[in-house]
Image 1 (cartoon, rainbow, N blue to C red):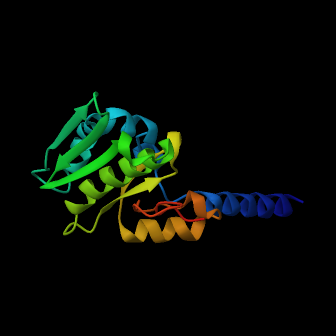
Image 2: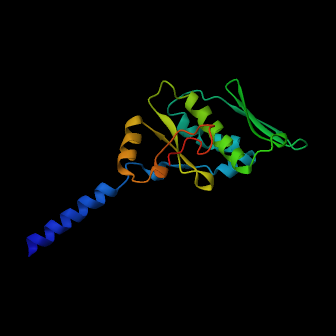
Length: 166
């Protein structure tokens, strides 16, 4: 009987380990796409700079361009401008959230091209987070996480899912 119990205990332990994610969610940087789109990109970028400096010694600066009269919100970084919101475009709120997410991850990942690390999005919308991961960590996460929407991804500017797997 003791042997059966210990075999069952071992099987349970192995099952729990198999279900555990290879991602360390304690290292996830909480972002919230709505906050990014509502003039929060520079603040979020500045908050992740200590982690970014681990991989690139001289990160680029972000400059915000906020025009409340138009209204318009854009940022500049590394010689590129990213328009997040412009009233004249007739876009939805979700579009500005997605564009803000794409801009932040694009700016960070352009700086990581020679590092072997990328900044991956986790979730989206108000639950958006980011993690610095290797390709192996991403592959391990894809193998172990059954739902595609839980997989780390690099945001794009393409509708409808903006890079997130479905």
